[in-house]
Amino acid sequence: MATWIWILIVIVVGLACAAGGFYGARKYMEKYLKDNPPINEDQLRAMMLQMGQKPSQRKLHQMMNAMQQNASSSRKK
Image 1: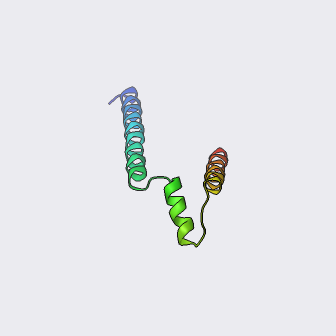
Image 2: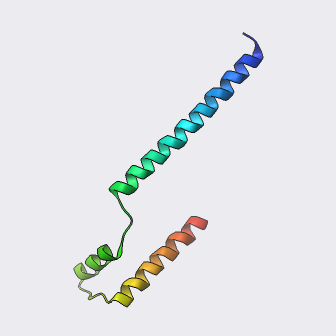
Image 3: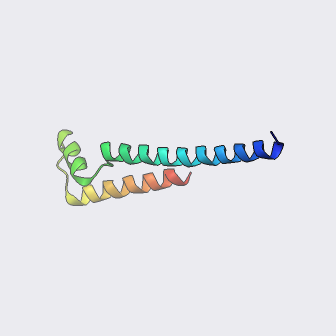
């Protein structure tokens, strides 16, 4: 078989694997986020009540903002 055919086959297989990997990883992350959603204010309130703290709305907003800032700063690194 000619060399250019092998090169073409390798390129096509590489592109197919890259596309399959992308869509597979995307499906996996969608399923993971569906099964394990990010924390929300109600969950945070329940955690604080379990720790014996009485959460105010102001304190919940401060903690949610701090968590969002921490998440966004860790993504930038």
